[in-house]
Image 1: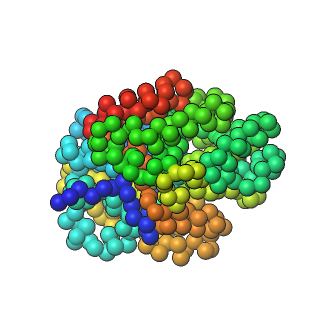
Image 2: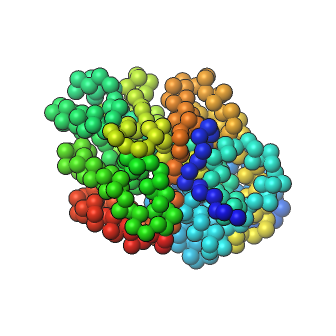
Image 3: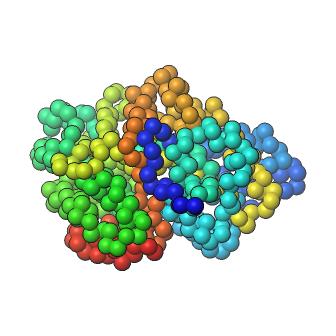
Amino acid sequence: MKRRNFLSLSAGAAAATGLAACGSSGPADTSKDSAGGDAASYWFLSGPPGEPIRQGAVDRFNKANAANQIKVTTFQNDTYKDKLKTALGAGQAPSMIWGWGGGGLKSYVDAGQVDDLTAWFGQNAAVKDRLFKSSFGPATIDGKIYAMPCETVQPIIMLYNKEAFEKAGVQNPPQSWAELMSLVPKFNEKGIAPFSLAGQSRWTNMMWLEFLFDRIGGPEVFNAAYAGQKDAWSNPAAIDGLTKIQELINAKGFVKGFSSVTADSNADQALLYRGKAAMMLHGSWSYGIIKADGGNFIKDGKLGFFNFPAVDGGKGDPTNTVGNAGQYLSIYSKASEHQKETAKKFFASLLDDTEQQGWIESGGVPIIQGSNSKLAASPDKDFLNAIYDIASKAGNFAQSWDQALSPTAAEALLDNISKLFQLQISPKQFADNMNQVIGK
């Protein structure tokens, strides 16, 4: 059976996303439920807006299922990835593995670390049919489903501070790369950084390249690298995109000291809502963070948003987007049968009305079919409908590169992106370095 390309999610469907929860325990937890079985362990990301929503889903499940209990532990993004890698290597991973699907999931599948859920979904068609079809792309490896899609859809979007635009005398957000570059000196002259960027986290830099590659050459440019084609990173469109980003850096397009700013601290969002930066390219989850941390910034109508602009002469469809088609839960193959039973029951309970409303109130769009019908009553309806439209109308919804590639190739990618943004390597050196890890 031909392997499904989980990088390309078809138009006409939206997807889902999420963040964290709280609690304690982990793979070594010896808690028992009322049936005397081991409680299932569940790790995920901490912080707003997702933590209380995920915790609420667990609390409701535990209350309704005395014989199948879940214990949770939360981590910041990068710490979570490191802890999970170590736990998997030691054979002590949590019963339920939260992640982004794609290349990371494939590595678990290849190592026999997660269970095949294809038959379970076949027996529980009602669970599968509720979800956006596109959300199953990153959950599917070699035609089999190894993860439960959950939470919300998270395309990458451009956010901007309307007040900063007014101060710089800028009327409208840029509709092309040329317009974007022309705004850089206007903001700098007013002492406002054109773009906020948490460069220390590396994956935030990556989002710029994802869009430039797509807008210049279309999704085929990265798909060639993913498919293992020789010298794929040397594609002229790729070199053009790499060159353009260094031109933006040299033009002082990003906030001063961006390479020391971290995403886990939400410092990049703070630069935007405090007026230190005019724009920021980030995931749609940033809306929830800004809503939670930014005071009245959103309430006062100061936040604007738009899709990444076209590149003059580019081949890519400007409706294309990149990001997370959902978040994903897999079942650890070494979990006990009782823990696996608990995990499957939990999967079937996800995205109930309470959880959907929680994601909507946080600024998220649940991956449930028809969830847009619930957006009209939300005070955030303008943003949520924009996200629904971007995700559902995209000519191509590509998965974030570091999630699509294998962990080995993804780490090389992030390392070289960091060097590229710090101007330590040229576009050609970046391409040469990445060509060496194709297929790894």
